[in-house]
Length: 214
Image (cartoon, rainbow, N blue to C red):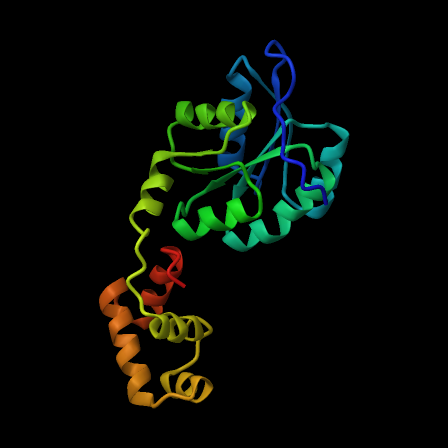
């Protein structure tokens, strides 16, 4: 896998070649239609994000891949595969959960931008153009999600307990694993619930994950 930074296509007169990946359906078709309607873009492929689909992208040589992510875990398989099959191509992630955690995961996997699925079409196109110019960018909704979670309110021990709780373990199991008293674990989980919010500990853990606290 090459570590060479992506470079924008040469020549301002050429159109930006885009592949749109994602689950089949109306949303993917609409996204592809919006991109194709812009005079400075050319949609060279619209397809699923399976291994075979990713491998075939090498044959159409897109400048940019716009991938519609349904679940965060998809990024950990699709984005590395794209780096292997089309290493010179920039990647932009569309997500319906524009959280700090998703943004950090995408950037760690070397995506050039993260855009919320409900972003206005003009804003999405602006993000694509910025990436085509060699910049990293994100939409306002995602940027605000990150700014809202700059300060992590959890203590080191609360993060540790929350990370274990995220695996679905009960208080007594967490206590045994971390060598803590069950009452201490319950206190940390109560503090997590207070800081993260939610109706129960599981929702608090999910909110902490989305905020990038654990």
